[in-house]
Structure formats: C-alpha cells, structure tokens
Image (tube, rainbow, N blue to C red):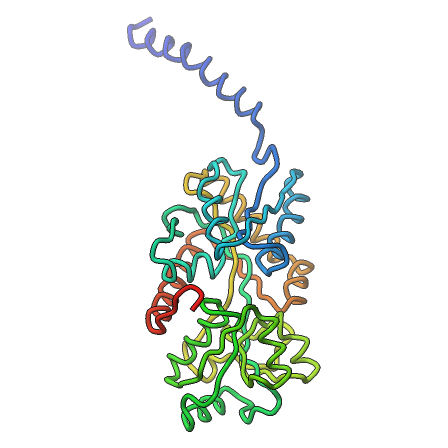
Length: 329
C-alpha cells in the first residue's frame, strides 16, 4: 500500500464517524416543523390580516401535522408587533404577517421606525391583495370615475371624501388618485371605517374610499354606489365595477398582507413555507373563501414579494411626501 493510499484510508476512517454522527443528529431532529409554528399578527383580531392569517394557519396545521398558532400583538400602528417579529429566533418557528401599513407606509410615515422591512426580514410570499373602492352616496351626481374627475375639475375643493383615518390605505389610495388626476377633493378623516361609512350612508359625506369587503353589502343593496375599484383586476363580488386604472392609466392600489421571516431564517424553510402557501392559494375551495370576502389571493415567490414590497414602499413614500401626511394628521 502506497503512502497516498494509506492517507486516503485514514481520512475515510476519520470521516466516517463524523458522517454517522451528522446523520444521527438529522434523524433525531426530524424534518421541519417538529413543534408549534407561530404567526405574529401586529393587529388585534378581526382585521383582514388576522382573518387570512388564521385561515392559512388552519390549513398549514393540517398539512404539517403541527400546530400553527396566530399571536396578535396589536397597537402602536403595528410597530410593536413587527419589532417582536424582528426579535424572534430565526429558527423557522416564528413568522410575521407584514402588511401594506407596516411595511408599505410606515417606513415613510415614521422617520425613526425601529425596523427596515427589506433589511431585517426575509420575504416568504404575499397572501392577499384587498381591493379598495371609491363609493358615493346615491345623491352624488357622478356615477363613474370619469364623471368624478370632471366634476372635481369643474369645482375644485368643493367636494370631500371620507376615509378610515390619516395614513391608512384608504386615505393614501385616494390621495394617489388625486395626484394622478390633478384634482382637489378635501379629505375628511374618521376614526375607523365604521363611523365613516355611517356618515356616507346618512348622506353627511358624499364620497368615501373603503375596502371592498367593508362596502360590499351596502353596494349590493343599493344604499351606496361604486364608481371604481383600485386594483387592476376586478374585485370578487363587484365584477361589474371597473378598475380606476381603466380611466387613469397606471393606477393600481390595494391593501395587502403577506408572510415574512426573521432575517437569518434558513432558506430551505422559507422556500418550503412559500411552496406550501402558494399551493393553498391555488386550491379552488380556499380561493372561494377569498372571493367570499371580496379579496384577491396573491401568491408570489420570495424574490417577487421583495420586489413588490420595494415598489409599494416607493409609491407611498412619494404620496406621503406630496401630501405631507404625518401619523394621526
């Protein structure tokens, strides 16, 4: 036996126990997940982000044979909940629901935001796009987006619209519409969608930007009318209402929520979660549950989701700057 051969045999002999130990550890750990997985939702229960997080958690629990729980950490514009997600161990057992508010708007709304969406987290996939809709009281003279634009140009500053509050998707989506059409409609902020809708139904305010899910029943029974939806695709349940983008080319806006992971979460876990969520969002039975809530499923790859979030942040940064929007103003 040559010297080289003896060295090779010795190396194999030393490597074999190491390989065996590695294989035993892998078998002992088992395939991910081996324990409860947590989805942090930075809002109270009942909001769209929470509803769809719970739907996905329920289906993933069935698929993974491990409990997937939703942990609501509301308050503070969603910032404390996002911070909890950032601080979580990157072991694949904690994920965060990211939204158009916490990841799209907050970076430009709060100058000292304690997190950076595309620096502190790994994108997994978007889950929903929640179309918004410009609605009007039946007495309002405009019935289409084109008529609204013409009316506003004829009498700038004399019409007003309600929103769920400053800095919300409803507010900023309407401001984007105003910027793109160069019209002047006065913003009347409310403390939530409910009070704003009550005043719209009562005729105290004539226009409102709201989520399709919230406005759907009032539109369908004729108490208010829908002029246009904010997404490029028509909204489920409101198929006869055209997109605003048909009249204002390039306009496309929505509330959204998706899943991200702490930065150092292993890529193989991120990719598995992505694949499993995307498969769920292509299941006809689950899609029906999205449609029943006038919401669009929006499965993306991690890279696509990162690009989507970067574009969303850039859009809202321009709107926030142009309108001088501040938290609570």
